[in-house]
Image (cartoon, rainbow, N blue to C red; front, side, top):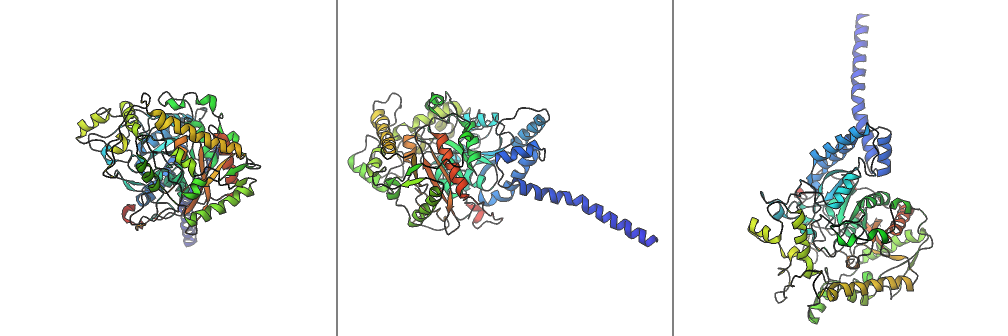
Length: 567
């Protein structure tokens, strides 16, 4: 009997011990199941049922970053203390029945050119990280303040190329970001860090910035939704500019609903950004989730722009009035980017989903032809880039410098021509540097920007009217994501990879949605654009396409890099 009792006690102890361990295993499995690919509405339900705290959700996302970021290098800076402090505060708020914002408890990331109070705004560039001269933000960018007010938990800052001036994601401040679907390939730039973080479930959403394609092209590489709002709907105040006359910011998310929620938070007028003044009277009102209907594509007509199919040459930042005819021809010839056959095939296949959802796709040689490219290419913004940098540093620079001149005095070397103008080292030796001017008072501003922008926008809307089109549809990139382990066309690819910079030049809204996958397993993205200020309609079409196709599938991440430190 003694032996039997002892055996029973041992067995009971073993069962009890096993039971004490089981919840930890079960809890981790449950969190993985609940939080992987979670949407904002689903997360709200989990919080409402008290299944998880904000701190637990934040820690789950941080754990994924700590496990995989060394391979993919999506985040430059993980702000764990700040994120956990916000999470703890919100967990306390939850006990008091506080009315919650639309992003309450949602872990997000922001791009490294977007000012966060107390953190370094690297802008991807090592020159802003020099010890003792770091560009530490004195306050939040406008959208960061809005995201915080809505309850978002900022986990960290995402990697980006220097000054956002690349179609791939190689940074002197942090190195290279790899594509989550295959780390050897590019995630696109300059919002490649954000798309890799979001598609990898490091965060639920993030912001990107876009001067020539930099939200939309990376979104296409990574099976996520990227929104380029009507320029002026969302403020760029507090975001380090590449070209303030073309720059924009918008949400990047895994589905259209989350992107619509985030856009509603980010939108609004802001004195720091003059183009937003008066936007409330012109824009379709939020919340943008009210436009999301599964049948929104029925009866709609979309034209396919000839300039994208032909890869017409539209130089980044356009062509200023001062260029000679020979320089204009060379710039446009150099910017020609043919559509790759495999991308054309993926695009045609993606259109099947649009048609299945009830839309008509129109091919016509008069839809934004090469003559449109000639017009829009004359939107030349280079003469005004220094003004944007000076205004940014004046308000968001650190105590050591509030201008380009003060930066040079403090550090001993100048800011690069990329953001202040002057001689571009990559330009032909006989090419004259573009003289910098103040946009608001420059007598050439009409010829450089206002005039060609109006003519191009008139053509854009006239074509919609003439052919009874609701919008345009086209590939977000001209090629699949390039392999960055080998040279292509004689060099490691740095871009251009897309032919959609004309969207920035006229400021119309566009969105990229997952459009399928190449045979290689890398994603293809479909881009749709609309009339100015019809952002709600645009999101409704993206939502209907998403619901009809369900193209997105998450990547399978690896724990060992195929490249040294993913650089």
